[in-house]
Amino acid sequence: MIGVMGAGAFGTALAIALAKTGQSVLLWCRSPDQATRMAKTRCNEAYLPSAAFPDGLQVTQDFPTVCRTQALLVAIPLQNMRSAVSQIGLTKTPLVACSKGIELSSGLGPTGVLRDVLPGSTTAILTGPSFAADIALGRPTALTLACSDGDIGETLQAMLTTPTLRLYRTTDTIGAEMGGALKNVMAIACGAVIGAGLGDSARAATMTRGFAEMQRIGAFFGARTDTLAGLSGLGDLALTCTSDLSRNYQLGLSLGRGAPFDTSITVEGAATAQAMSKIAREKSLDLPITTTVARLVEGSTTVGDAIEDLMTRPLKEE
Image (tube, rainbow, N blue to C red; front, side, top):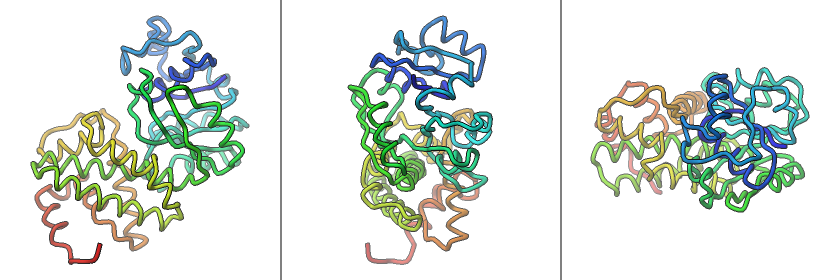
């Protein structure tokens, strides 16, 4: 049996995909009202109304039972993960983070937060180019599963792979986390470029220089280059910087257009940009795009001023 903590779009989509294979899946929902509705309608009307629940998927509020499954997928937005997992307690169940970003308060990624709250726990991260609806509807998707323990990573890979969800395994959790977090920052930047009417050529330049920046950050933290060039880095960057379905890209579009954005929507790239910008100052890292996005989401610069600052930087070799 597999447990999924968090009944948002991504957690629900993973639960549906896994249950379609015939496995028993417990989907834990924090809200009693939402749990009751999902159990009655056999779908998540709030996030994925067109994806029916397979027979093997059960919605529960029995938290202790979810934590005693063979693997627990933690599909909680990163900035809320610390408080959510603090109730798990000591567990031998492998914890698979299914969120992206850098925690504002600590500068840690998802597996870092899990280990900080639950020392000694076995942690992994599932990340890569994916939209919840694609996974739930059975559209072919490939993701990266990163676990520092190779044997456990291999077990999790076999357990979580489905006919339509293909997982590639790595032990480089740092690279997988960095790729998943930083591509959201670059998606905000690309959205701002398009929103401001600067064109596809400017977006391509932003993506390319953004990827160079991701590699620079990754190298500083010890990530492997091949991880950042894989699904969790370059693959996810390509998806989120070009699709209107990306929340981070949509935030960038709003910033570029000077239009309001729904603050109830989780946009991990905003917090990640602020957290990484702080790290850049402390470690003397040159991260112009990340720093610019942080200033944009904080409201301390405009898109026009940001573009001028980036275009008038000293000339250099690529």
